[in-house]
Length: 522
Picture 1 (cartoon, rainbow, N blue to C red):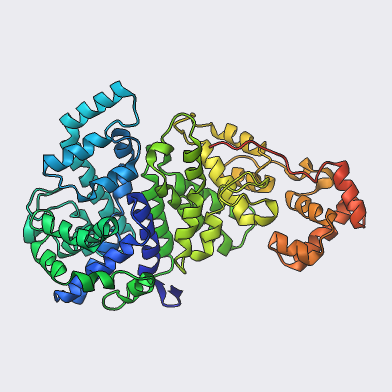
Picture 2: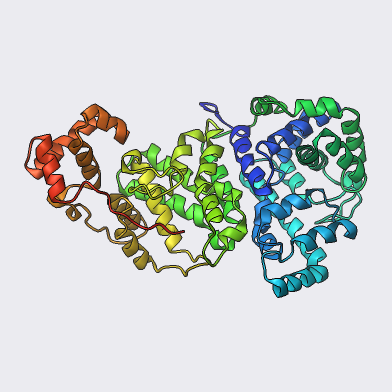
C-alpha cells in the first residue's frame, strides 16, 4: 500500500514472490506460506523482532535467485529447468545415491540417443562441481537483488547463505551449524516443509524434515516443527494467507519512499531476464523505451511513470515457461506456443495481487496485444487498447527486434524501425513515438490514411460507421464521451461530410472498415 508516509515494502515483494513459485514449479503462494511458517517457528522459539523481520523477508525471497541458472539447468537437464529444480528440492546433494538417479533421469532427455549418452557422461564427470556453482550463483544473485530492493544487510547476508548446510558441506563458504545465519536456517526449513506438504501432505513434510535434520537443516528447529507440525501447518494454510502474511510482519512495517517501487521493479525485471542469455537487459530496455515514447507523445508524468513500471515488469510471466522453450532455435510445438501465449496472463495475475502494482497489471499484461486481434493473451482488438498499451507493445516489439534470439539474429536499429513502420498490427503513432525515443527521425504517420486521419480517428470512424452512439464509442475506446465527440467532429471536418452514412461510405470507399491482417510469429 502506498500512502503519504511511503510504500509498505512487504506488499509488492509478496506479490513478486509469486514469480519464484512459477520459476520453481511450486503451487501459487508457496513462498507466502513458507514465510508464514518460518515466522511462526521463529516466534515459537523466542526469536526477537529484529531477527524475525530478517526471517520474514529472507523467507519471502528464498528463491529469488533461482532463475539465474535456468539456462544451464535447461541445457543440461532435458530442456526443462522448472521440472529440474522442482525435482531436486528433496535431494541431498551430498548423497550420490540420491543425486545420481535424479540427474541421470533428466540429463539429455530432450536429445537423440547419442546426445543423451554424452549428456549422461558429462553429468557423471562434472555434475557435482556444476551443482556447486549453480547453488553459489543462486546465493550471489539473491543477495544482490535483496540489496537492490532496499532490504537491510541482514536479509542479503541470510540469502547469501541459502545453500549452506548444517553439516558444513554446503556452499559458498562451507559454514557449519550455528555459523549459518538464523534467518537462513528458518527459511530453508520452511520452504522444504511447504514443498514436501504440497507433494506428499503433512506426513511427507514431517518425514523430509526428520530425514534431513542435522544434515541440511538445523536439528533444533526441525525438532520444534515436528513436535508442533499440525498447528504450524494449519497456521500456514487457508484462503487468507495473503492477508495474514502482511499482518505477520514483525515489528513496525518497513516503509520506503514510493520511488523505491521503481527500483524493486527494475530488480525483478533484471531477475526474470536472467532466465535466458537471449533476454538479458530486455525488460529495462523496454521500460526506458516505453517511457521515452510516452514523453515524446506528450503524455502526462503519471502515464510516463506507469509505462516505465510496466516495462520493467511486463515479462515476469516468462517464469512460468521453461527456458528450453525460450532458448529453442527451431519452431515451437502447439503446446509450447500455447504456454508462451499465456506468459502475459501470468504477469497480469501476479501484479494484480499488489495494490501498489495493480494499476499497471492490465497494461503490463497487454504487451503482446495487437490492433487486429492477432495478439495474446486476450486477443484484444484496437478499440480495447488504449494509448499506453499501444506504446508498450511497440516498445517491446522494437526492443525484441534489436536483440538476437535463438531463431534469428538481431536486426540493425534502422531495419527494426522500418519493420515496425510496416507492421499494421501496431499503432502507427505509437511506433513513431518509440522510434523517435530510440533515436530515429520521426516519420510522418498521418498521411498514410486518407484525408489525414490518424489511427485513432480511423478506429472511431469504424465505430461511427456501425451506428454506435458517442457514449457507446466512449465505452469501446475507454475514453470519455466528450473525447469521442471531439474525434467525431474532427473526422467530419477532415472528410468533408456530416452524416453517419456519408462517413460509412467514405470508409468503404477507402477500405477502412477491415483491419489489416498479419501473420504472428514468436
